[in-house]
Structure formats: structure tokens, C-alpha cells
Image (cartoon, rainbow, N blue to C red; front, side):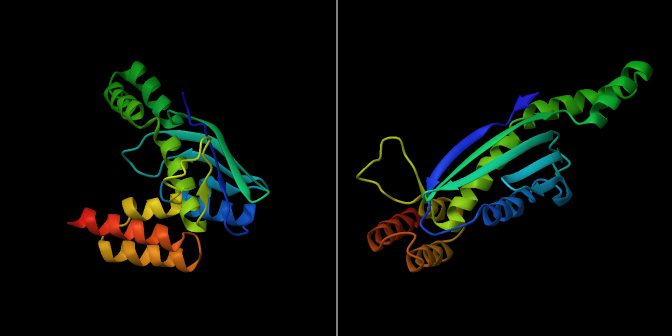
Length: 195
């Protein structure tokens, strides 16, 4: 069994609700889990079930708690990832018949490779939420020379072409998620990286 615990907090630049954040999380996590396995709760989101991709074998039981207080969003994910029940059925059948043991061995190796994916997917989902709402990540020791928002950093790394990156930066500037200086610097980085 692998733990998929993660924690983070960031400063909000606009008012959002826990329900809104949970809906964004569900939208992001539904890329990796069946929507029927994702439940929005009063305090966040609950995920129970297997990864939806055939080549990713891990069953998850995790809950993400979201708390918003004083323009600060804090999240905590607590849960585990393990082999799905059907893999254990293959194991038992393999010991009884000898035929399914090879299939179980394949699934077990696949699980060992994928067991940290649920944590990775939760981290990616919260990064997407942070990007979507234009929040600033809180740092223990703020770097005064680089106050670029995490949302804007996502634009420089995650968007496929230069034009769409700059358009997304412009949206962040228009929504006041980043400053004009941050926009100019990130635009320069995007253009230089494309050369």
C-alpha cells in the first residue's frame, strides 16, 4: 500500500468557495478516475476506486479537505493507493490453477510502477485549481526577486504553443492575477524559450 498524502496552501486573489474548488478538482481528477468514483463533500472531495487508464493499476481511497480562511486556501489529501481487488482474485486463481499467476505478476509490476500516480494526480489537480483561480503560492521564505504567481508559471510550462501561452498570460493580466511587470517578464521568457 502506498500513501498518497499531500498538503499545500496558497493566497487567493479573488473570493472562491469550497464548492467551487471541489468542482474544479472533480473536473481535473475525472481525467484519471471515473466520475462515479469522485464525490464532492462539504469539506472537499472524496475519491474511491481505480484509475481509469487500463495501463495504470492502482485503487485509491483518499479524501481532499479544502479550507478557505482569510484569503488563504489550505488543502490536505489523505489516502492510500493499493492493488485493486480483481488483482487479488488473479493471485488466488494463480495459486490454485497456475494459469493466472503470470497475469497477477504483470499486474503487480504495473502497480509498483503506478502506485505514486494518485498523489501525482492530486498535486496536478491542485496546481490546475491554483492556475484557474490565479492564486499565489505561499512560501515559507518569500523570494523578493521573483514574485511570479504559480498560475503564471504554469503558462510558461504547460501550454503547447507560444501564441496560446501569451494569450493565457494576457487573460491572467486582465483578471489581475499577475502584474504588468510579471506579464512582460513571462512573455519575454516564453518568446526566448521558443527561439
